[in-house]
Image 1 (cartoon, one colour):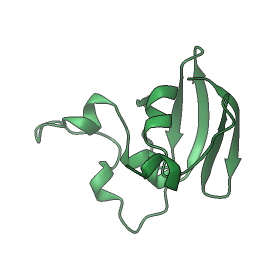
Image 2 (cartoon, helix red, strand yellow):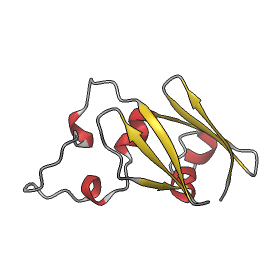
Image 3 (cartoon, helix red, strand yellow):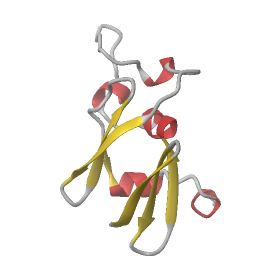
Image 4 (cartoon, helix red, strand yellow):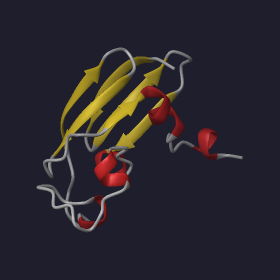
Length: 104
């Protein structure tokens, strides 16, 4: 799956895919969906310099930077300092929230 275009929105990003589908993601949604090892399986003994996804409720999360990773992914820098997650285009398409993608 390849992105045709990626644009910032007021509160996140939107991706137009090669097949014409449009996916819109908020920064908070992407931060909560972070696929990095720390966010997915953080042992209690690990201390990090950023807010774990569950701890930023009520705090505005922004995307400060989106960096392409090869031709297959994006890496986001979030306003809470977190930047280790690599979001493959396959993952991003799979977590699209539109009605078409969420219908069984």
